[in-house]
Length: 273
Image (cartoon, rainbow, N blue to C red; front, side):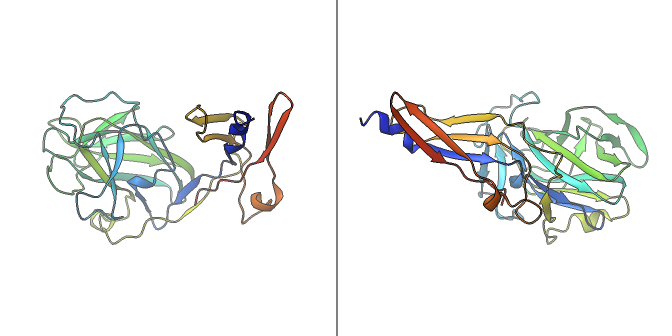
């Protein structure tokens, strides 16, 4: 009988796809690095060792690992979703702490649904396609240097010709490289204003209803007796403040059976905040 009872300790987390999306305001999008809207943490770790992080915390790739071997793009992918209302060109600024000025000083970046390009002094110097190396040569301190192209530093810009929701991604590259904050500044906003660490993080809102989950179920946890297992279901988009209230209007139950034993376990709505 006790063996059968392990089925009732499962915790269910049906997520209804309510992903936070940062809202551009006044030509600025300000996002804390540790607040990715979706994440594959892999070898990223939350740290507080370097004082002065804008949110009090930051993420470091392979903390304490002194290897100078770099990782290929696609490992530890972090994603931020943001909505642009003021169309035009935006510069990417990342506040980072490289452990050395030539090693442990870079990360992969990508705008998968927008065209990014590199700028030397003024004017475009060529498109960037897919994952791009971003580096900061100011080792041992927090800094805003956000460059690409080795030995010939170029700034990174991205064009948003139409209003809408876009995505920014990063992927781990060099060990012991820490990132604190991401800022996108419209060309009409001064760089100094965008780098002001007193700026509040941009407000967030729910993703548009078109981003429904696909109904897939992911099972995580240690699949052994007495251990908790989580079923996470990607369901329809929902928001407790508009339309159907997911906390009162949705119900999800899962039935577990073993022989003649039947257990019905309630799930719950897992919001983003």
